[in-house]
Amino acid sequence: MPVKVYNTLSGTKETVQPPPGGRFTMYTCGPTVYDSTHAGHLIPPIVGDVVKRYLRSLGYEVYWAHNFTDVEDKIIRRAQEEGTTPEAIAERYIAEYLEVLEDLGIDTVDVFPRVSQHMDDIIAMIQALVDKGYAYAVDGDVYFDVTRFPGYGKLSRRSLDELEAGARVQVDERKRNPADFALWKSAKPGEPSWPSPWGPGRPGWHIECSVMAYKHLGYPVDFHGGGIDLIFPHHENEIAQSEAFNDGRPFVRYWLHNGLLKMDAEKMSKSLGNFVSARELLDRYGPAVLRFYVLSHHYRSPREFSEARLEEARRAQRRLQAAYDGLRDALDRAAAAGDGPPGAAAGAGSAAAGGEVAAAGGDGAAALRAAAREAREAYHAAMRDDFNTAEAIAALFDLAHAVNTCIHRGEASGPGGAEALRAALAVFDEADAVLGILRRGPAAAARDDGLQRVVDGLVELLLQVREEARQERDWVRADRIRDGLTRLGFVVEDTPAGPRWRWEP
RNA sequence: GGCGACGUAGCCAAGUGGUAAGGCAGGGGACUGCAAAUCCCUUAUUCCCCGGUUCGAAUCCGGGCGUCGCCUCCA
Image (cartoon, rainbow, N blue to C red):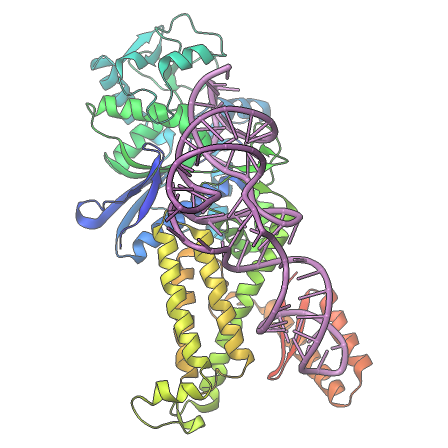
């Protein structure tokens, strides 16, 4: 079952050819760490995480490098403004970013290379480009000569003529061609610098990624990802450098670009100042809802950010979560009720074929089993088609509906009920091991601190009192307890099996 | 100005030739002491507009209109 991806380079969907040995490499452009991580930054790592997890679920290995740009003009400026060092600035925002990834459940990145740790390799690659005649040094700067690389413009589909026509910046007279870009920039007084054959300076913006991809993954890289705004000039230049360095051999096999997050119809960006902090969103919505929000759109689509959209995602995720939780409850009850022979309760123990026959009596179980099978197929079909997570999630909603219906009709406890529930649970778990949009595992695992246990105990106690009031048909007191808990963020639901509660601040 | 992408119900959003997924919101009903959750029913003869190709198009082609991105740092 082949996976297809939309490759920016070819402009078409292509069938992914697994590399020899079944080990993929993936490189994604991480942030320039001069300011806080914003909501838009979450998309590439979430998409990368899903790509890696999905391929892994198919039995492949994926080695993923996600870089930090920690040497850059804006970091230097920021350091000067705050009277500290660029390293301190970078360190601060790298720590914040890593914490955000961790809280999002992204533990799939294998290496986080940094520019500052690859100076020797960067200088070596620049030197090689100079030696091969693709680059030239002028007054301590080194530029890449785009006219020497025939494929220049193939990713962003533009020609050098178009680029010159559209040039809006003042052309540096020392460049041979206006589109030439810097590989090495000489340091101005007071700026951090590294020694080089061309004098003290620092790398240009693009060379770092070519170098770090080469060093950590080797060429060709199987998947290279990032925001669609990086196609030009960043990725275009990476191709030029890397393929020139590699004597024309391909740099990347599949280019994956994600759509941008917009804010008030403009792209969210640090330079525009219209961004929302990722940390804040994470604290307010939690990883499951945030991932749900990101993955409920196709990764290539642009999406509009707003509180209303996130609230909507929260409600939608809650529906999925409720079905999942209900499923696990039902399984627990089935296990507790009669762990015994699955068919015994209904006395439908006929025989081997009994499972199917008995199901005819109330074929909720059979329907659920069929729904689980269909959902699993639909999930894989969606994921294989350019990682269409929106469609994959739709398959889970269909399954959620089937689960709810089965439980609602009381057919989950019938013959084969538990088996069907387990089949459904297996599909949710399989899909969610990739998507990460459900809160799973025993709730207790997340509550290991003493205070939390006290709170749980108090809520349980209040609910017991409320149950006593309800027994006495003292609705006033019962509602007072429930309303009070609701105001504190505890949602209480009465079910045939007793009251259930959850904390939803 | 050039290059690229997009325009699907009140809203979000899948869907590249076969007769419109899924979600949110809304309406009606069931269940409930009342709720919540859940279930049942309901919400686009139509996919920005105009032409064309085809037995057949949201899907292909041409032309408009609109929005966004890139051409300068940017996930």
